[in-house]
Image 1 (tube, rainbow, N blue to C red):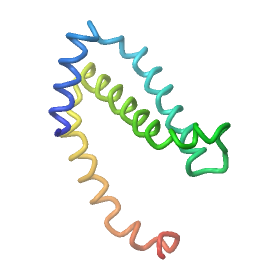
Image 2: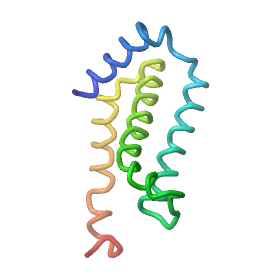
Image 3: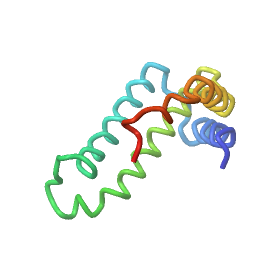
Image 4: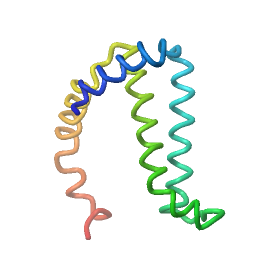
Length: 113
């Protein structure tokens, strides 16, 4: 699925199953909540925090994927609501980064193996 197709698919889902979009402020709050859920799992999977039970640890990789998908879904909702073409925006952003950072990362001694 392309980014453009994802935006169209989410829009169709919202307008049929979801009834309508939440307002932009509500979706921004939901996006923040979903990013926090990703952060919670990252802190336990890759950071120093631990899970309360072995069962939670076992389920965490699938839960992380689901939470990342939630972040993407809400971000797409916000893009649709505000008229942002994420496909074009990502291409433009990558071009900006490529020009700006052409040597920056290669010359960073902290990134060398």
